[in-house]
Amino acid sequence: MSAARPLTTLRTFAAIAALPLLLTACGYGSESTDSGKQTEVAADAKKLSVDEVKIGYFPNLTHATALVGIQEGLLQKELGGTTIKASTFNAGPSEIEALNSESLDIGWIGPSPAINGYTKAAGKNLRIISGSASGGVKLVVNPEKIKSLKDVKGKKIATPQLGNTQDVAFLNWISDQGWKVDAESGKGDVSVVRTDNKITPDAYKSGSIDGAWVPEPTASKLVAEGAKVLLDEGDLWPDKKFVITNIIVRQDFLKEHPDVVEAVLRGSVKTNEWINANPDKAKASANKALEELSGKALPAEVLDPAWKSIAFLDDPLAATLDTEAEHAVKAGLLEEPDLKGIYDLTTLNKVLKAEGKDEVDDAGLGVK
Picture (cartoon, rainbow, N blue to C red):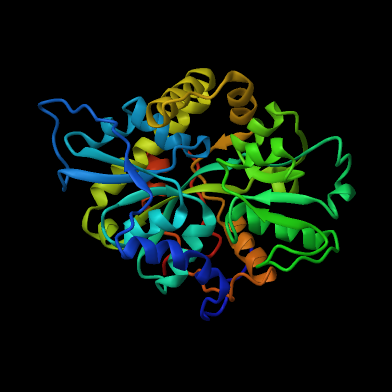
């Protein structure tokens, strides 16, 4: 467990998100879309303290708790007459901005944007209130060019975005090999090529990259194109678990509508339980949701291996988020942050206890 660190200001890591946030503020759009998923509410269902809760998530398998929970009505069941307004996002900074502008109440999001959003606002805008998923990140490579881990040196490897969760993890792994790379430019003993996940498979096919450190389902899409899994990031973590998706909430919403937050978390916990008890049905449900959102379902050759590599859980794995922040500091992308207070797991532990499940720990980073 890592101790909380002294508060200082963000440097490069803040700049990473600055442009997307600026564009959003200037009216160029938040890179979010209405999911189009209408929740069905019984006529006699009792509303909670608000008529509607605004929920955000990514159209991504690592956000399957939200995909399945909405698709199967498991979240809506717990909310009663309070309806869900769902929005999907393609970038973490966009979701954080939606949270800041109060166009979002609760969201599923990765660790790096959660850390960045919390520190940029000096701990005043969000809380992590639950975990959702672990794993689902792999280093996949062209087997004709890279046959072992040592062969990665001198090659061109893609990550999704400068300073994003996978980028930080790859930079840390490079450092552990004793190799040198300039974090911002990506130049050095390995060429780190920041490439949108949507473009990465085409970049691989064209030969402009030799591999990628990416989340699912992009990793399995590359494997379907002939790439080979060289390393599963889970193998680098204790118990092979590390946070890939959290649930966050606006602090004022948590304070003003604790009943709604509790209902969403109860729905999330029950959704994860249903996913783990019915993996094939859950996989099909998530894929159906993706098809409705994107117009195209994932083929079995991509869906099946991707789904197997993701674990759905309620534990936010707080110690691993703290470690991920340390990796960003080590890479020179983040000034030493104070993450004390980023978690409030009180409501989650209340729900878990009521469901007869073990409570979870905030690694010393919870609210005072």
